[in-house]
Image: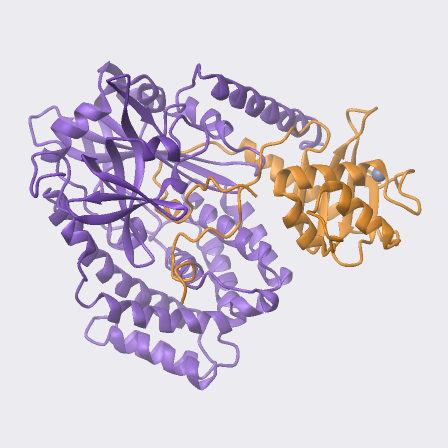
Length: 472
Length: 167
Ligand SMILES: [Zn+2]
């Protein structure tokens, strides 16, 4: 059992399992609005008007009150313009922002770490206004159809907007969101025959995309630069059919002697849907030396690396040098407990944005049907092994046999979960570490080598086809 | 609401399964069809654009220069058979059968049962009018490889976790 307040990375578990005051009420208002989007706003029914009012009422005491109230009224009358839909998306985001803040406070209680206080720079709003307007029009059409009213025609018109946005670095973020979202909608057409709808998820994706169409919202401006030793904890992979992002979580020991801080470094790429598994590492590896350092268990030395206010390094290899050996578990045991957590940018205050590095050991592993749980100080924490990428040495079986774990605390569908990034298990009385990103920099593992070869061949075929057919 | 309905990170589409791409570089279930591109066995500069419609199984096959495929007369050509096999590898037989609305007799669907099931319905040869749009979707798909990776953070990708579940 872990002591109630250990010196190690984690943690108290009680703040993660006890009810959060006001959470159910806030989420009920979100759900009421989300149900409106299931049916659509073309010919609103009385029940939809009630859902819209519920959302507006929930933000009545905030600066959004007047605009949300007007938007709800217009939408209930079937006459909402795009600006009203943006206002409704903003009201929903504000509610989830408050949920995020309450959950985040619980996380800090559990870890005993403090949260950085940041001021977020003003955004300028320079990017392609025409494409943002086109995206907003598509999203507005979706809101009118409702998820039950979508068909191939309305969904496929996103493709043109996405294709035009993808090459523009300033619009890439919205483009990749729209691409993943529209692919899900396309696979679910016609909406009339859907057996079930991912209600919260599609409302999330819709409202985030809607807010990103507001000029200036997309930027993640640099808030300065950092120097110091970067100690990787692990890597989190995110992917949809045509995009991948690898996000390294790490502790930075600043060169100026300031306290260590948690930072992230991401690399992402659009991809054909047939590039999967080890092929994802091959796409990303050449663009971030950190992936190789992570695979080799090394630190990196940063010089003048740009960083955002929310602790995202804007990675460029020219600001990073290979450092000495750095064991992630030593970092998790010794440095992580003293680190300061990064704050969330205003727009990223959403429960899904919570991905906080923690360290656990001495837990009791339990099989729970198909899933796995860790018993921590008398509380039960679900373990999300489904998020562990298949192209790596970490497996659900290894997690089940582990004695120590570096993971990300997340929250979804009403509960905190732990996403394993790395585990230690004992093999012949010695601790062996297995990392989800163990193949990020390449591998000599037999299965890994085979997967890399297959991925290389797949990309080679596509490049050959592209070379022959694309510029004809 | 169920947990899945109120999950922000609910998994909606299973990821594509890895497969060899030399013969069929592109296959998708889109626009109410199984459609894709099949490399010619004899001419490296030529590809066939093939499709089968969901429900009616109306099929079409022509080259990227819009010449009709000699094999697709009255019944599925080898390109369409290859397309079905590779779609099953990429998406799983169950998803392909469901999308095309092929009723499996009383067996687990497979590439074979799907092909046999559709052929038994004596499908008609359809128009090749979709070929241009399928081919342009293929080119769009290839163009994704030309887009440079970026190190700007993408917070929305938190909504797209990987899954170990297979299609
Ligand atoms: Zn043919």
